[in-house]
Image: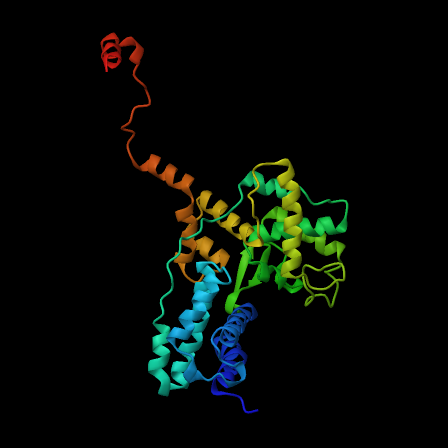
Length: 336
């Protein structure tokens, strides 16, 4: 069977254009892939369009809008998820504008579908006490507990994304002064993150225990499971959930949901509260735009309160009047 123009274009986009010309990460490609898997499912079961016959001329604005409504109403996806799926579709049809200018008008109609406004979620982060409580949970008498403490400490100290932590190799660690970790982030961009002394000490002990200073270990994963294979995102989430559950049993400071990304938010908030410039926080987190980092400044209400106290004169007196000493006023109030 000869592939349709849509099948060929989508295949080229996912397998050639995104990894080859855009150099996007494997996670981003999976996000695009999953979006189009859902879209094809919708076309087959709700649009009456057989997948094997689907062509570009059949994909129009009403079909995409119907797909987005299906995501929200039938699959109960959030507006954020809906917008993410639409962004993937927009990316494909921006690519098609150049590859197939004959249908430019059709593609621009699809690109005109707006992103839906959604309430911005608050930045979920841990207090210093809550973080200490979680880090106190690993059983340090076991090698797995020592590894887990090191893993969580690195996750917090570097503000790394969970995939960045998974992808770390032994060669990415430098423990000689000044100790740094080389992190490869989105679009294969690297950044050098300084390590605090406690984290550096934990890493040194961990790497010694697991014989990572030996020759031939440079390209091995930094964090390994019991089978000495690279840890997975799911494995790291499992470790965090285990210790969060234990900490929550003894403390009310632990939020209802703590994901690996919460450690990243926590590092950013703690740096901000310590007076670190947003530019440095942006570089440490690997943000492309400072506006992304500004969400932490907008979220920190305590920082806002302190700034207001320092900026404005104290015009409101903290001394309350002694109403009980003013008999005339009390008599007037009683008469009301």
